[in-house]
Image (cartoon, rainbow, N blue to C red; front, side):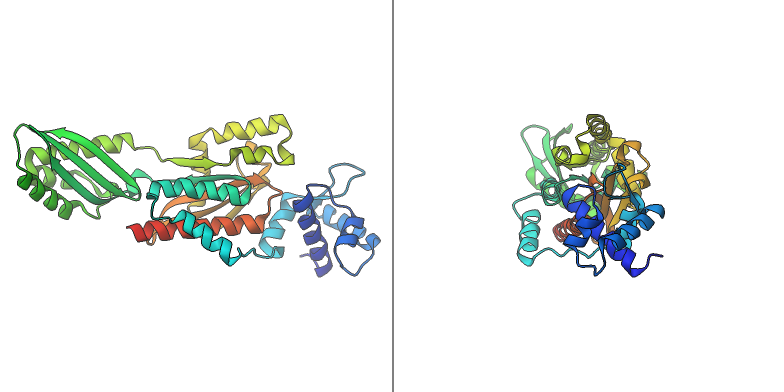
Length: 339
């Protein structure tokens, strides 16, 4: 364990490095932070922190920078939590939960705002098709044997399809079928659909039921993959750590691999609350110069997706973690209320 003075020195170095992106020397710490000790004492403490792996020295004559171990201790023990000012918090929540936006648009907006707040790359995994819930179904009789089917799935998916039947149905008949289907399917998730429900729909609603089952099966096939929304990719290029072209290209290529990102964020979905993976704690080699901050979001009590921020290990952890938590909470509230 680190004694109190080493903790103060380590925290001062990390705070300074996060702010300036420049290696930190003992004179800088003595000048900017009133630790009550001389630069020589601070220099000795920095040497001890380097020896124990909390700091590293990029060049012989340079100051020190935090190691992944130093950042981990900072996040777990030393960091002061960030609290958004009330006005900024309310504005953020209002922008995400604007009633003029559909849930799908709100997820896009949440990704944009999170990237803006953190000046990093934001990622949001949308709810998987298995978790979509039948909210409302409407059938409208058209000319001849055409029926317009509108499926509203929660959260944020609307499907409109035209189906054809062998015989014509009156508007009243279609309205009755629509009411009965709503009663049967409302609240059922895609995951819960199976042969039993499909058989009952075909048995009870004849050729309309069969056409609807075909439509649902087609939708399941089309929507099999999870969607991931990214925003703020250009932000990473503004960070001094990524002036190295090879490093920047490696990260950008990793961000193009959807399955890789889904796996990365899917691992975080196993845990509640805000999670932080720092540098080499990330399995991907392209991510080992970055940190990943994640949090799940909910509909009611059910986890439906994951929010993440990717930035350099020199990120402002307190602000990024607070931003991820606020956006997660706001999105969960919106999607739950819409249900």
